[in-house]
Image (cartoon, rainbow, N blue to C red; front, top):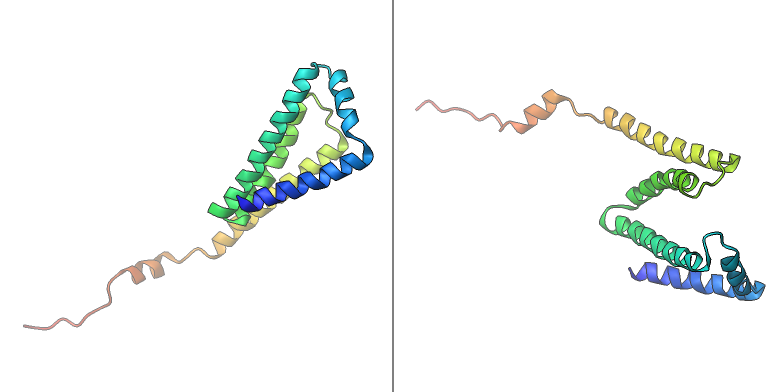
Length: 145
């Protein structure tokens, strides 16, 4: 949680300095006025997007903390194509070549990882006889009494 807070604060400071240098804060009002759905909805969308992204990054850190960094990476790889597809469906964005290449590469990486995992698990699959023998108690000498 602390790491996420520090990362977000540094990112906010860097972005704020950049926006101040380029005088981008004056453009926000103009973008809000020109937004098709209205000025109020523009600000609601900006604030909700910030909250959702913070939840996303906090979830990623939670996956690292409770699971592993590998699991976090897998979840991010899965969510990337889903995000692209939902953006095309919900926001009626054009599905351009860049999105197609990005989608293809992320799906390729995702399926390659799982293919490699399945292949590795088949190699390491224990022999059932060896596993059964090891679960039996060791042979003991029986005494004739």
